[in-house]
Image (cartoon, rainbow over the protein chains, first blue to last red):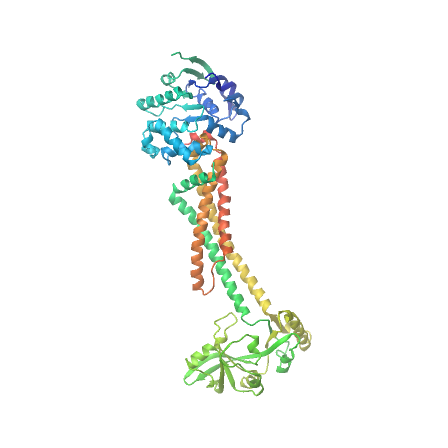
Length: 230
Length: 391
């Protein structure tokens, strides 16, 4: 439990917009251990999305260090980053980002395809994951035949497909009504109880408070890092 | 990711937009059909022309006298003097005229009558169906005998045997001694509509002893050039060094002239067809680009879930290759059928060769690959963050 999963030192990200430089992240230091449930809260423009993209290996930092599970991301090629994403990180997006032309089952299988798992294994695991989020009967339905809450639960099953160390959830309840939102949050909490490390990005302090540790971010800097005692 | 998996994903992509995929494939189908049909028809007609020329007789040399001043012909002895037993197997001058042929109440007008000697049969490889051809004795005795083509026989005698019967050529009686086998039409004119009589009979029948054309058969293919040389020397002497007074051409010259024309024509047809295949390829590229844009978000999701550049590249290249190879296969099927149908309508053997089909198929694959790489590369290089944000 005490092993570090995410180590970030003095991380900056600078976007060039014409003549101007925008410092989206300005000297972030962060250490997240395995098994933690962290929420990153900030208003839009605070840099929280940029931080999430960098933690998710979708974007590349301008300077500083970022280690995930002991791996220095600055030395990796595009392909190695893609492989890292498929092994170490599961994404949950605000707008679900399921492929509309595929069934729930196929959507959950997708990350396993890119890791080269056999068809039989994939199917078995996808069924198991869908059962876990309570959607086994819906595995042959397409996203447009599911409610928002159900779609997000499929997305959670997909995020778990390759058994990643880190689950990155970006406003997972943003597009949901409060009932399905709290359902989804409960599933995420359940995951954390089972040992998954979770980073939840949100602008909503009610949701952020569900986590065990809250990091407030503003203007690209960490404003506050508080651990909630239960 | 395995290729089988990439192929499955690509097939899904194609099937998810059936109408569009069909129209894109159609472009390739039309291109491949055009290539196969045009090339096959070109090859078929080349083959037919070639076999017609070869059917004129083997080792054939034709001498045509165009003349120099008043000397615009040879006499019989001069013509026969061109013979050189070292190189030449057979020689026959020919004089032609046009007559009205009659038997009973049946008349054929404008028929060509050719005065030839007995050698002519072997030179032109003439097959006699009934009776015999003209013999040296007929020639020597100036017999009024005639060998008639199959069409003339049909027109004058119907289905009765004409051998031994007497026909009238411009009012003069000739005994039919033979009927030629039907040969079908050819670019050199058909013997089916001709009548042959001994050349010496021709001299007084047409009142014309001026020989302007001589058919010669060389001993074998190796002596064709030697025979031409020997003939050339003799004719140069007769026409006092004026090489424009006569022409000596052999079969291989005709063949190479004709085949160079047909080859150019085939190439031209193939080229035009190739352009339509190219246009089909541009259609693929166009649709693939649209597809990449439409599926930007899908690509972003796939990348976030761990798809490598290579995986995305493969997915789109396989998609365009599948479209083009499907088009190629359908094109071969339709092209084959169309070639055979058009070929039989044109009475030529236009069955596409395996090489033609393989070539046009691999060309369609090549087109698919070439025009698929750019859109696929565009997809593979999309930035995942921007792609995920794309609406």
